[in-house]
Every structure is written in structure tokens, then in C-alpha cells.
Length: 125
Image 1 (cartoon, rainbow, N blue to C red):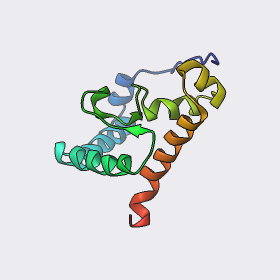
Image 2: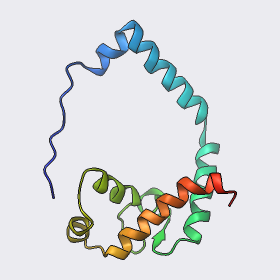
Image 3: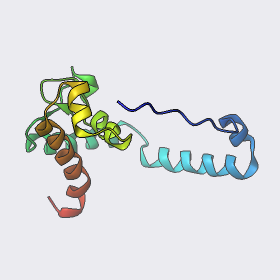
């Protein structure tokens, strides 16, 4: 696995929040985000949407008793988001398979699931 070094920021979040320009920008973002996710109703709808996709997606599962019902590679506790993060961070499929004990097919299933999550709202499914 490739070593990645966390970038250091020349400022703190507190300094940003205290800055009139950036503080307003961050507060506006948080207000909009909280307005979009005002309560658990939105989360329940999202989980229902994900369960619907999982029901048609081989190799992916969701279970309240496994990683807070996050979509995972079936039979594991490895979240789909973990696979995506590994790819984002520059790991190869082979490295992911080796580090997490997965197959290429399982990686492809995770990617197919992520694509469906992003595509379905626009495809009328």
C-alpha cells in the first residue's frame, strides 16, 4: 500500500470560522446542509433507496448488525466506501485485493453498486 502523507494546513478551522468571509461561507454551507438533512426522515429514505439497490446488486449487503447498516461486501465488514477510498488514494485493484482479502469480482461489485447509487435517481428506476 502506498504511503500517503497528510497535508498540513497553514490555518486552523477555528481561524477560518472567525474570519468574516470564510466564517460566513462555512456557516452558510452548514445551514444549507442541515436544511437538506433536517432529521432522520431523510436518512431513512436514503437507507430505503440503498436497500432497494442492494436487493438487485450481487455481492453487496446491508445489515443493521454490520457496520451500522452501511453497504458492505457481502460476508465481510468491508464497506463499499472503503473500496472507493482506496481507489481514490491510488491503490490498485491488486493491492486492495491483497490488503483486504478480496477478489477482483468483489471490487467490481462495489464499483457497480456505487455507479447504480449515482445513476438510478436520474434513470427513472
